[in-house]
Amino acid sequence: MTRVGSIGRKTNETSIELKWYLEDKKGFIGTTGIGFLDHMMTLFAKHSGTTIECDGKGDLEVDTHHLVEDLGICLGLCLLEALGDKKGIERYGAFTCPMDETLTQVNIDLSGRGYYVGNFELKREKLGDFETEMLREFLYAFAINGKMNLHVNVLYGMNDHHIAESIFKALGRALKEAVKADENNDEVPSTKGVL
Image (cartoon, rainbow, N blue to C red; front, side, top):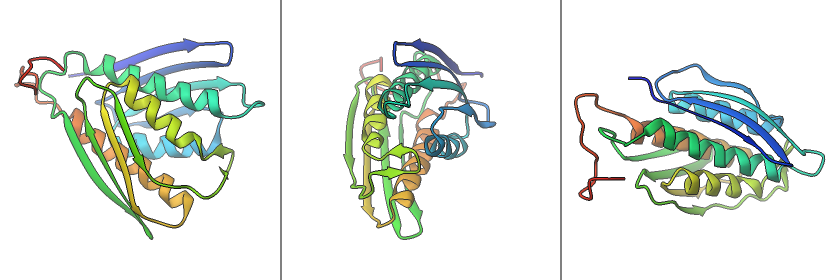
């Protein structure tokens, strides 16, 4: 089984070429042009056990908003394409990630309905070249465009880098569980018959 999603998205503000291989394990290949976000995507790809190929460019001379949000959109759309009719997938995924003084819980339902809840606070304005307010925008765009319920709860933590890192690691692990597929199962995991 090879599940892959790809998208090319071009606007007046950004240009993103993205491929996401769910069965591959090569990690994050490429760049978003935002160093801290590249670091987070490397963690996410590693802990989800996937390969994400990314060529991202944007109007970073303005700020990171457009590129970060558009990357979340592209990842969500790629995931939908890669999952197809969602037959045989686990559907639900959950992971609680400790990162030094921080503990983060992420829960996912690949329900076909986009909804995002995030309970965390970041104190710093930036982490490297990444504007911290954009973390919520990224997660929201990913959840809505990936048509999933995504709940992110930082139970406690003080260091903003650790909080962000624990979110991306937990997101990867929860997603790895949710997309797990049984080739011998052709049922959609829903009483509705569709997701």
